[in-house]
Image 1 (cartoon, helix red, strand yellow):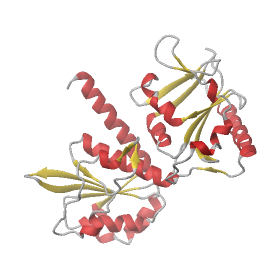
Image 2 (cartoon, one colour; image 1 turned 45 degrees about the horizontal axis):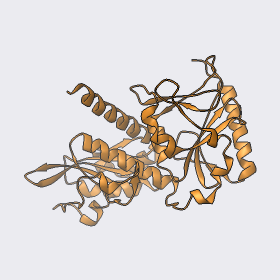
Image 3 (tube, one colour; image 1 turned 180 degrees about the vertical axis):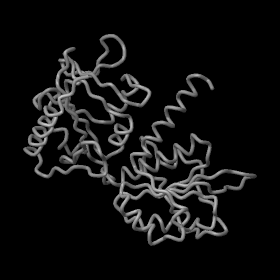
Image 4 (tube, helix red, strand yellow; image 1 turned 30 degrees about the vertical axis):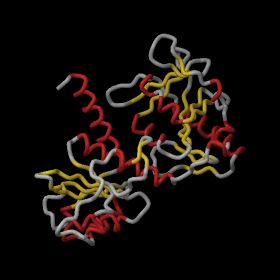
Length: 309
C-alpha cells in the first residue's frame, strides 16, 4: 500500500498551525509514542492520509493506541483526509464504541476507511458512521461544556491504563490480582471492578504499609492463603527509586518476580547499579512491551474462545 510520508508530515504541520489559531498553548503528550497533542481542553490523536486509488482515505490504528487515547481525559481523534480543510475531529470514546463494527487483523490493527463524503466505513454493505457533524469541528476541542470532569493528567491516565493491562493479563492467566488505586478508571471501569483481591493480605516478612501500595500484585491461592508471585511498579514521571524501593519489601520472598515498568532504561540501570546486591531479582519492561503482551493475551483469549479449546 502506497504511503506518502512527506505529504502526511506536511498535513500534520498544517493541522498544528491551524490549531494554534484557536489555542496558542499546544503540547505533545510525551508519555505516548503516538502523535497526541494537548489542544485547549482536549487530548488529540492526529492521523493524516492521502486519497487512495479507490477514492478512500485509509488509516491504520492499533487497538493498544486507541485504548490509550480513549482513557485520557477529553480525548479526540483527528483524521486529516487529504488536507486540513477536510478534517474529521471525532470524540475518541464515540469511535472506541464502534470498534466492533470496524475491520481489524489478528494483531489488533484496525483498518479505518473514510469515503469521499468523509464518513467512516463500518462492516456491512454501505454501512457508514455519519461524521458530518465532526467535519472541521475545531470548536469541540475548546468547548468547556464537554470538559466538566477533568480528573487526570496524561501521566496519571496512562499509569492507570498500564495498571489495568497488568491486572487483565494476570486475570487471563488465572492469578488473583490486587492494586491499591481502586478508584482509577480503565476502559470506563474502576480498577476495583477488575481486580479479584480487594484487600492486600499481610505477609510475615513484608512491611504491610509498603506492600499494599505496590501498583499491581499477582497472587496464587492455596488453601485460602494468598501467595505473591509477581509484583509490578509503573514509573512514568516519578523516580525509579521509589518503585524499586516498594518492590524491595518482597525481597525475602525468593520466588516472587519483581518488575519495573518504564521507558527510561538508563535510569533503571543507574538505580540497579546502586542496588547491586538484589539486581538479579528485578526485571525492566518497557511500556510498549506491556501493551504488546496485553494485546497478545487478549487475542489468544479470543482465539481460545472462538475455537473452543
